Amino acid sequence: MNKRRRLFFLLSPFTVYSFLFFLGPLSILLIFSFLEPGIYGGVEWNYYHHNYGRILGWADGEYEDFDIVYLIIFFRSFRLALITVFFSLLVCYPAALWISNLNNKLRNFFIFLITLPFFASLVVRLFAWMIILKPSGVLNQFLLSLNFIDEPLQMIFTEGAVIVGMVYVLIPFMFLPLYASIEKIDPKLIEASKDLGANKFITFFKITLPLSLPGIIGGSILVFIPSLGNFIVPDLLGGAKVMMIGNLIEQSFIVGRNWPFGSALSMILMGTVLVFLLIYVKTLSKYENEVVSLK
Image (cartoon, rainbow, N blue to C red; front, top):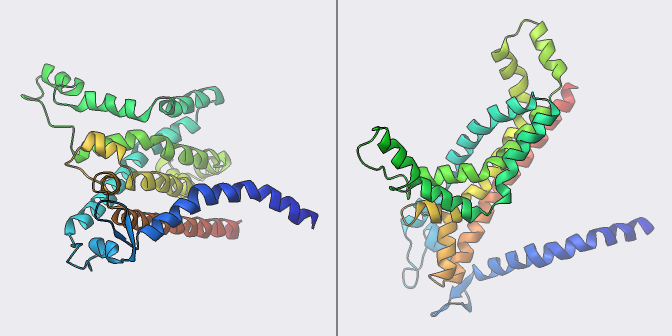
């Protein structure tokens, strides 16, 4: 009985916090997503499932119309999020592999450098990228001075600028899980592989890469989820030309004042995120079971 009371008191703060700041707002969004939008904003307390139909194809046609543009925005968000994951992995894996082979003092220094951008405001950092990428910015002026281009390139307000911004912002989320997985690899396995005559490439693909798979999956999920719902980076670096699902949700609530439609968009986004989280948990548990069976 004492153990139950102790467990109850330990879990009570977390339970209250989760209900107030997660389950409560989530429940409000879920309820609003099935209500009729008000004429001047807000909601009418009538059951109305056409908020989802406006996105997925069964809108009533009187008050809400199905528009393929919403699906286009969804698929664009998926595509840009996957590209962000790919380039984040391409940048972070070699860096994590290299840093894991350094001595402790240099390791701590480089990890500090990677997490250093968190000490500055995200908006300030993105405005710095706007200064770099705009037609009269630093990068265009540098290329013009070297005669590589004849006129300024349109770098900002493009998908490329959004990808660069999201990779820059989310690099720590990819690097830290990768570094944690690579650092845990037993050096004796690498030495044994070399003693058996394997070169660096075979050792990497047979030992290092498979053992770092949990870090790859974890980092990919941590980058993919914020990329999918990101709205600050597309808003500043993509403008009106590169709208993602996060921007659409923001405009539905603030500009369109259509709270039920914005709630429906949010619930679809959250459902998608939960699916990917379940895939991650299932894949990781399967991998851990295989490792345990090998031992």
